[in-house]
Image (cartoon, rainbow, N blue to C red; front, side):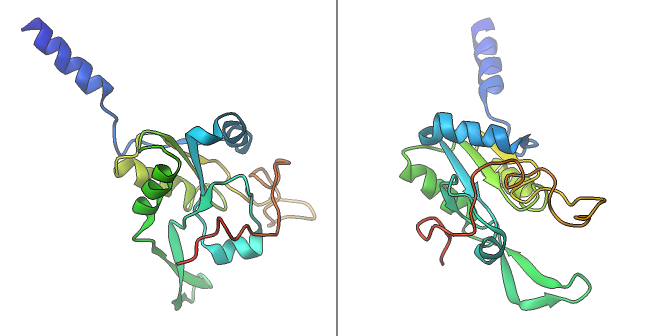
Length: 180
């Protein structure tokens, strides 16, 4: 009886908790993971490719799989932008990318969006809810936060990947950018 109970407790403790709050990592920590363990992780830019085209890209990612796609048929007047619709193929595309690297849903997946909060964290949480057991997101995302004062007030010049001295470019890698 004790052995059975002990076995049950061990099984419950070793079972991944799906839907748990994903962990944020700094851009520098994500870069270090890519450098040290690139073949053991999946680093994904989850922005819409049109956004990437105008904002910049890091070739450090394995690929671009949008968490949400701009719906150019629906414009939100009060927010002055197009609606963003969930990508119905997001989880399956991530799983396929993992398989392509010889990995499974237990491998580390790191998501990167513009600021870390709108799609980075939600995409990581979504993956955790869908059975991916080791998901993190880059805090402050690719562009980082807006400066609150000075000549660059309102511009995304604070923290984030591109403001941390990490590699990025205006040029997109066509091998990595999502194309439906």
